[in-house]
Image 1 (cartoon, rainbow over the protein chains, first blue to last red):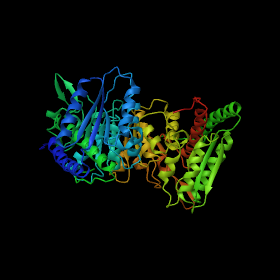
Image 2: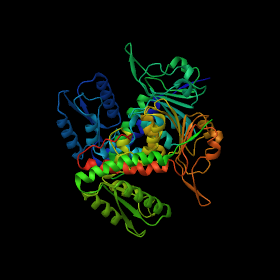
Image 3: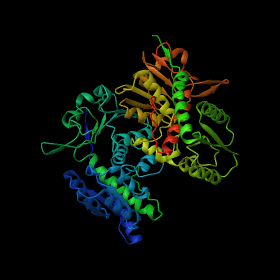
Image 4: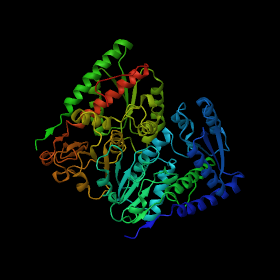
Length: 293
Length: 293
């Protein structure tokens, strides 16, 4: 089996170039850059890296990022106040809450304070309802990024494909399963309480893992010729690794996304896509990009 | 294989007795009955039957049902006005919109006009988001009824069970899949675009069909000893039939729900459960019933 390593960075770059052009068009028309505010409470080390990456990518495509950084002792009320004033600020197009937040703050309250029109992470209760009921909304960034990647490789019609989704988180597994079902895939959702995960995985054409368990997916879990998508991120001995045992699985898969350099790149690009869409929508314009779900 | 026919009517009756006691307690304490308003536009024949059934069941358990019946020529605006005034009426505990509505009315607008505290069908966008994100909410009646029935038969812990959900509607398939995944089941969602439905169905412990295709599920689709739940309702030659070919499937299943007399009874009971919960919640009291999801 010749396995193709899916270069997430390359696909993200194509998408980001589209976004950059749209962002330049926005600037030419409205004399300001699209703007994303990041609510960042505390000093979680991984969050620091993620926020830095988002900022870097945003700068490259002409999106302004402002980080509203709070010390971890801040009261929830003050963070809510900040989000509410950003909701009212007509120069702000998107607002995201960098998770996790410190224990004394309820992340749900923060996420649900972001108004739907600026909820570019798509994590609010209302936006989740829009997604589930198939209404127009901001798709959560990682699921959207994975879907874009799958369609880039397999084409737009993925109906009838048999998918195994390992993981049922609200950030990846649940929303991605819903999106894939709506695309016409036959989706099996697997998780920590599933029996026979290996055997189940072995049956699917597209295997997606988003658990954060290093080397959960080994060669024995993969059908010959499957498309394996690794959404896991863990740190092992100072290195970033995914859920998939890359070296063994690439002997049997037809496509595999590496970690790093796979899905992660698409997630950030997807955030930029939602932000630029939000910016145009605030001006009453629908943004129509070639690279779209 | 000795197959047990699951008597939905009997289980619904147990639940309804619980609800009746709670409704009597409500009356004793607040000097009025819990009240459900049904928005009914047009004169769809099946809807007429459904509304009559709901009313009858409600009367039996001491819940007041008022039908707001509009001619099919009514404007959407007037129906929205009606729902808005019911939202404000402190004597109204639950509001449901009987679907379908005539083509010139947008059902989504009506569903989303119902305030979350009175949305006892659980069909609003916001309530769908609450359900998906695992927050406290009104569970849609048929999914909740099916879940109650499964737990009555198999016990409260159904984690690890392999479920095949045939159908991906917003009323049954999608929400029920989400609830079962959260319960720890391994769920495969099958639908009109799935390939090999028969083979997929044959692998599962709990097979649920909610498509409205008579005789879709035959003996060859069922694993020996499976629990088969028929949520389909169709009219064939004047009779009500489900998705499951009952006569052949009962030779191989260990449990089967009949149509009529199966899940349908639990759906109405589930609506009464949500209404009585809403009534107590409006008075600031949580209702704790034995028979609960």
